[in-house]
Image (tube, rainbow, N blue to C red):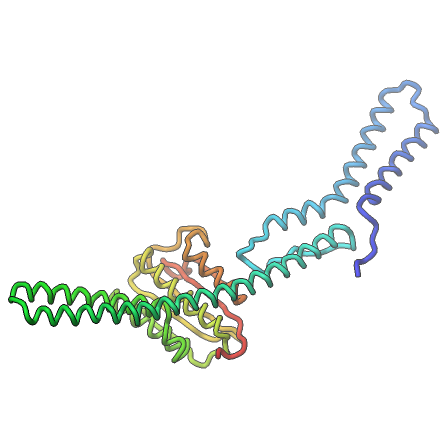
Amino acid sequence: MTPRYIGLLWRIFVPNAAVLAVACVVLTVEPANGRIAVLASGLIVMLAINLLLLRRAVTPLVRLTALMRDIDPMKPGQRAPVTGPPSEVTVLGETFNDMLDRLEDERSASGRRALVELEAERRRIAGELHDQLGQSLTAIALHLDRVAAVTDTATGQQLRGVRDDVLLTVEDAREMARRLRPEALDTLGLVAALTNLAERLAHHTGLTIRRDLERNLPPLTWESELVVYRVAQESMTNALRHAKPYALELTLRSCGTSVELLVRDDGEGFDGAPGAGTGIRSMRERAIAVQADLEIVPRGDTQGTQVRLVVPGGRPAP
């Protein structure tokens, strides 16, 4: 039920009418009789009082407008404070907050639907890379090996070289399939998937990746586990591509009823606006989809960047 209040129109009109009435009374009691100074002084006093009253009436609306302008859609949970007695301003603030609630709920639901559809497409592509393309390339490699066995030595060596290149392409396709769809996440769980991810990155890059992965974590939904994995994957990949670090730190631990992920590097540091890159924006959108908090800041203890994701606990992942 909307609270009853005196409208802004009447809060402006009544004081103005009162000022004009007082001015009429003053002029009736003490006519100006041509004294311009008296009329000018009265006009100045009236304007000053009018300005003061209008400012008092309009200031809350100006303040609320500024707060609305500062709301960042990539940082959900921000709300305009509603203070003061019931008025158009408080009703507008409550309506604006209700609108934000509805928008964030719909954005979160849309994000979860998009997340599920994206992962389904990743799974399909990963399956085709692993099964269809991988099997076809393997068959080609075997055929080249058979042809090489019945040709002369020089031609055979060239064919075996082509066969080796094809087998390397098979391994590349399988690696792409693993990146597209982390099988360990489905079969072994989040901790095992992150361990496998860190070991593969360390093996391919030679970089030291220190892990501190707690196993007794609050239960997470499947979508939340997937977001944690993807944010860790994107964070470490970004660090390797852009920061030129000597080492990475990967931490997963409980934080009350939530789960906290930390990815820290000792590279060149963070010198861009959060959300400027496609990868960072993708991480933020994934976090919004599961109502998680994502923070990307420079490390406080040394040079480098820290990515912190806090995901609220939920029902166990199926």
